[in-house]
Amino acid sequence: MSEITAPESQSTGAVGWLDRFFLISERQSTLSREIRGGLATFFTMAYIVVLNPLILGGVKDADGQYLGDGSTPNYALIAAATALTAGLLTILMGFVGKVPFALAAGLGLNAFVAFGVASQMSWEDAMGLIVLEGIVITILVLTGFRTAVFHAIPSQLKTAISVGIGLFIALIGFVDSGFVRKAAGTPLELGIGGALTSWPIFVFVIGLLLTALLVARKVKGAILIGIVGTTILAIIVEAIAKVGPSAGGKNPLGWSLVVPKMPEKIVDLPDLSLIGQFSLFGSFSKISVVLAVLFVFTLLITDFFDTMGTVVGVGAQAGLVAEDGTLPRTREILLVDSIAAAAGGAASTSSNTTYIESAAGVGEGARTGFASVVTGILFLLAVFLSPLVNVVPYEAAAPALVVVGFLMMTAIKAIDFNDYEIAIPAFLTIVLMPFTYSISNGIGAGFITYVLIKAIKGKSSEVHPLMWIVAALFVVYFALGPVKILLGLG
Image (cartoon, rainbow, N blue to C red; front, side, top):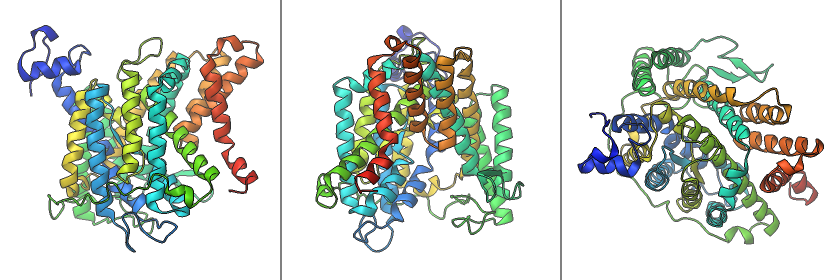
């Protein structure tokens, strides 16, 4: 498809409408870049269609039932619902937010719901809590509170959030590929026993070198070419070496999740009966009101600031964040994300949120919501083409995350490390994201430290009032464990 280079006023027809509506030329992008970016984002985060069912589908609730009911896992139902909600919400973000951000079931949140919430109530009750959390966070957006908090954060802390997310997604890429693993004597180690000894790791290394080389040479479509090329290599390696799956660690030399081979069938009709299986207030009759509120608060605070960090980080990488740290259409972006939380609960796929993997599309050149529309359409197709989604292994998508992590980390030069009042909070924000495997933990540590340092140095007036409120909320967030123990809930 030809590039759009004409000014907005010269655009005509359907292509001209797309250009004007999505601000493609205004943001110095092109239609082909947006399409490439949408494809890159999809292939980088398509794993959620496979991974979300594995996390949610393999856990029994307090009644001994799997999600979707029954005594056996219902992976196909969860996969179809996961792809459908991701597709619809990502398209909504494209049209309303007009930014290249994709949404899907949140990692971390789904694990918390599966292992921390559903174990104490039915799956329907657990999903009802997610809907409640989504409603509360939507109200916070409509009242302006969530947007006001977004604008109250100092610009250099926002930069630190972006850099921290870069390191975080790079670590995700290294871990998901098996290049970095847990070890017996140390927290992490290189490969298996300190050596790169498996074919999947070989595929990842080749993919990383290929993608890095393409990016360094500024090749158009570098990240997408890297993903597709590495996937082809993975398929060839599997066909020859017969590596097989890791099988939950039983075969450490195997592929971590998806075995790269052409599927036996391409099209499969989905079962969407899982949608709507939630009970809004059922949990309050199963557990104490206090514990139910604590669950909702934990979901809310994690969703609230994970999204804020992602929006800042990916928005900065796309060049959409102004010098004062503001982002265009912030209220619309946060509104769609908040609606996504409730929609994820209603669809029984866990809270949906904006994905840091959107940075892959941005790294490919995406700057507008049209890329999100492309990603969303691919997710909708994945409802019917789920066998094809399973072709791309982690090891082929992970190199894109590492390279994008590097691109996001380049923003660190905007932080004044000679000013310890901002440098220390920025440092903690950056390092605690990958070290604790949580965006929210990094943001919380940075916010609390920033407020304390300003207060101790007698500069409380320089701290925005909302920063005090948010810092206090994070103190509560970090103290939830001891609070539960004191209340006899832990």
